[in-house]
Length: 139
Image (cartoon, rainbow, N blue to C red; front, top):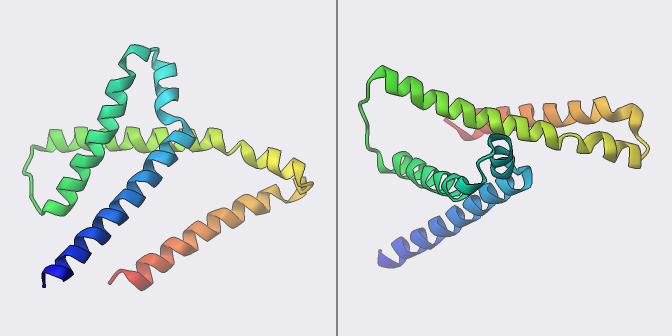
């Protein structure tokens, strides 16, 4: 029984480290935090941005896995949702800047005429993958 728990702990921590590293790499590649600092002209506060991301991720993990229910007023839920929307919007904006890679890549590979098909293939792949996950794996 103890060996089983130890294996679960090791696998859980390993998976968490892998996902966390991927999340940090994703933010680093997109340059969300440096871009935010550049736009807001708040370079002296960069450590606060970094700690906000780390503590936000830890808090989110704790709330997700603890099973604790927090009863808060509706206005606080609206504010919480607004913060989530801002974060998702910033990720979308960063991805939009990164998508400039596609025209350059298409030009180098001499497939300029097929860039619309390339983007559509990515979109449909994402849709089909999401549907597959939710319809097959989630019951």
